Length: 81
Image (cartoon, rainbow, N blue to C red; front, side, top):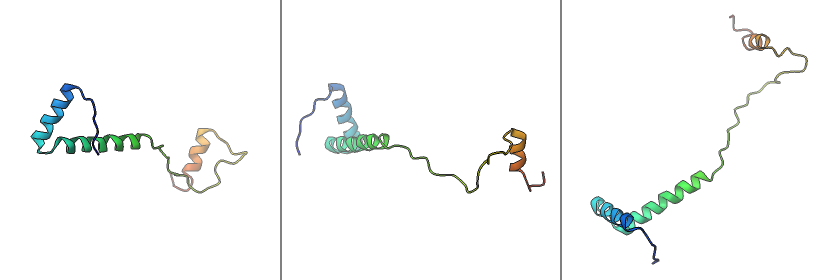
């Protein structure tokens, strides 16, 4: 498809020189740049989903002591330390 876009003179010259230096056409360079830009936009718009790292167990139960010394003691029960 043919279309017309307005670029600054400086950007056009830089793109043209870069394409020539790398042995590609200006069209190929522009298409590659658009693919990269679209990919970045799609990545930015994805919501981060925190994976579930929960473990089994009943958790802290009502009536259990919640001070740090008690919690640390429960963590290390049966580890001989």
